[in-house]
Length: 130
Image (cartoon, rainbow, N blue to C red; front, side, top):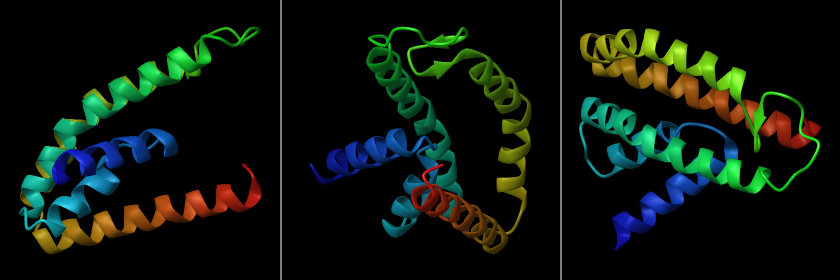
């Protein structure tokens, strides 16, 4: 029950802030004593279902709106989806290789920097309304 609730909370939070689930999933799994490399790999696999359900939610909720600009499917901007998909396919193998070759301590530091940047961006957007 606790894992299911954690998964639902992580998926919901990820969908609401428009970020992949990894920024919450990895620290949660490390907190649960999962080795960092396993946590990163599992988080990558969980990213797809989180993104899929988030996209369905944004399409369904945005479908009711009239007068959306061209290129949108609900709240989803299809040209952006195409760009993100292409870049993900190109760079995912590089990221996976780096995660397995770099020392765990360095991976933790890089992840901490990324979390800090995401948090800073979220706070900035909350304060400025952008």
